[in-house]
Amino acid sequence: MQDLQPSAARQYIDAVSTFEALEEARDEGAQVRGGMYWHAGPASSPQSSYLIRTTPAGAETSLGLRTPETEAIYERFMQRKQESAERFGRAQGRIGPAPATESCAARRQGGPAGGGAAQPSVDHRAESALSRGRNACALRRLQFATQLARVDSSMLGVLKKVDSTFRLRKSQLYTAVNKDGFEVDIIRRERVADDPHPIKLSDAEEDFWVAQARRANVLLDAPPFSAVIVASNGAMARMHTVHPATFVAFKRWMAGLREREAIKRRRDVLQADVVQALVDGVLASMSAFGYV
Image 1: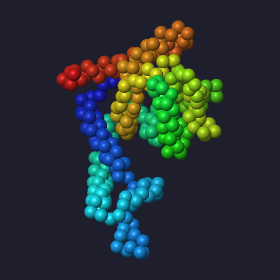
Image 2: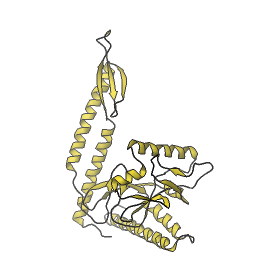
Image 3: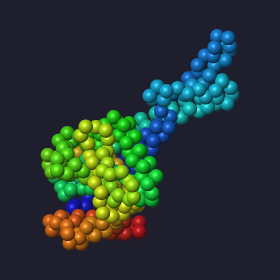
Image 4: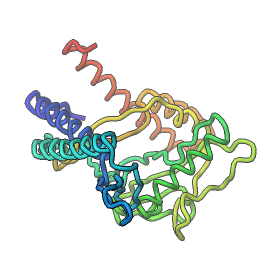
């Protein structure tokens, strides 16, 4: 692990600020996707027209007859759409590569982030059902399936968009591995009552079968953590993951399981130590600059 030099750190801070502005502009643009237009009324009433709201998929909804109120809705929508496009364009024009680093590599495609060089196995939590009841679990599974359907892909297919060499392990269908040995595990909390199990993530011929994991609810209920990460070429993406403190505590618990393979327990300790060192380093830097 290497700290950024002061000049690179300043460049990174500026780049993150611009990246976040681009995210905000993109989110604002999502609220005005599609369009609006005036649809002429029937021939029997040529003076009337209706305000129509369209979606990117081509669906249309009538918002009512042309009145001062619907005219105000139309004008405001078109103004927001134009402002959003201009804001997004300005933010996109300002963003440039962050300081290149060999410490991480990531790429955003279809939602998940994928890694490059070989490294210890990382648990990717996809079946993020809460442990607060079967209704919540069913809702989360439905939301996950809906997201996959929206990108017209299986979970394995999404990974292959990032790295085409990912393959499911035939003896362990909750794990995919790429040519560099990078592994992705899909886990869920332990089964409760009549929860369905096993669970396949999609109807695709080949996709993950979710594995139960002891105390997985600790990870699933962990506080959210999000950070902007930088690829080795300076490209940027946002990563959503488990809170570092939760990860460290969970890995130390796993390292204490006597029935776990010794080599995996050593890896658990190493991963916990690395993340704890990163957290301590960040806190020390923030303290030095008076942020904590």
